[in-house]
Length: 140
Image 1 (tube, rainbow, N blue to C red):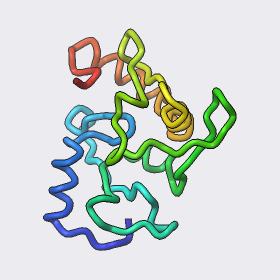
Image 2 (cartoon, helix red, strand yellow):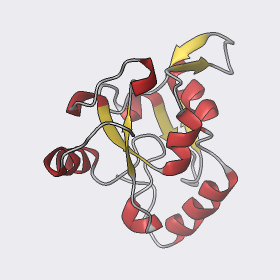
Image 3 (tube, one colour):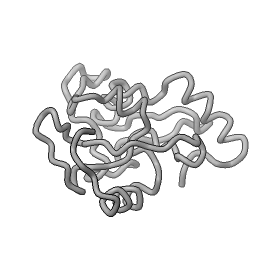
Image 4 (tube, rainbow, N blue to C red):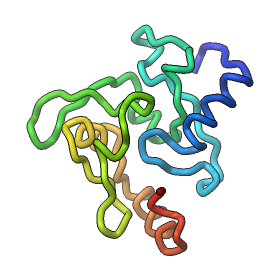
């Protein structure tokens, strides 16, 4: 992120996001890796550095998202907007597999976001399996 972010704004975003990635829902206290503040509508496309356009994301989700705002739904082949963690409700677009390790897309937005951000990437699924075993996942 290139724009200045005040400590107050950073704290507001952390509180809004509950210290979880807005996409894969990984908790930074489980990973031990601080989450980044990301522009939901990217700066490179004119997105502003204001609270309504900022959320937390883990580094892999943020890197896979890049400047994308839409992606192809693998079910329909149509373009769909990516999940917007401030405006969209997670459970409308996603669910967890029965074992709690895989994200399942319930809508075109959910499916497109899972593919574009690789939300079921191998290492993350392995981590989720461990978190499930100790009762830390899936998030409530």
